[in-house]
Length: 107
Image (cartoon, one colour):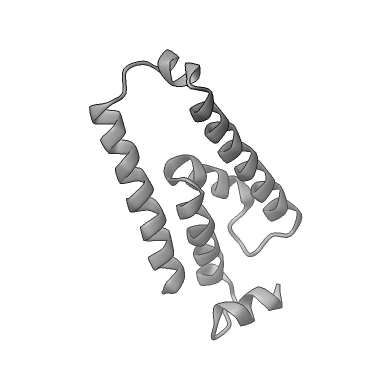
């Protein structure tokens, strides 16, 4: 349940800020790409997503494979995709443990 709460927070809070910016302040993609700070944050998020996806590909956490992590990241960001991906894998695991910590160590 805790992972779902964190995932919901990670989906709703940052994306609400993004939607507010998109509806009120967005002008063009060219303007975004001209903002070096924005480009650095975008690049950092893409590198972090690729690194975590690579780690999930090397050491799968359950039946849901790493491409789904990439899809979730693109839809909702890392604050959503990491806890939701882990929750999905724990939920679909044929032998879920009583706690997340026990499940994580058993992998």
